[in-house]
Amino acid sequence: MGSVLEFFSISKPSDIYRHHTRPSLINYFLIFYPIVFMIIGSFIGGIIALKAVTKNSSKQTKD
Image (cartoon, rainbow, N blue to C red):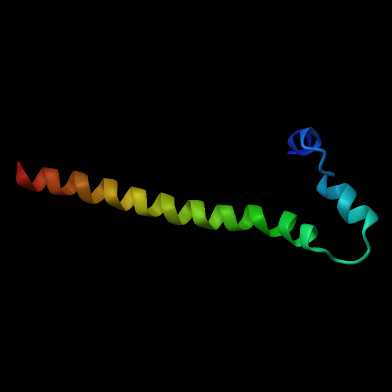
């Protein structure tokens, strides 16, 4: 992640936390966006898995 941030001239999260004593919006964003994407991803993955299971079970009952 550090190399991607450097490519766009964004400081690494460790540098931001080290040099800023007051909390800022970027601090909260860098902390919470991976957690939010993990929650959204697991929710969407669960929906896709349920659809796949119900689709396969409905095919087996029709045969």
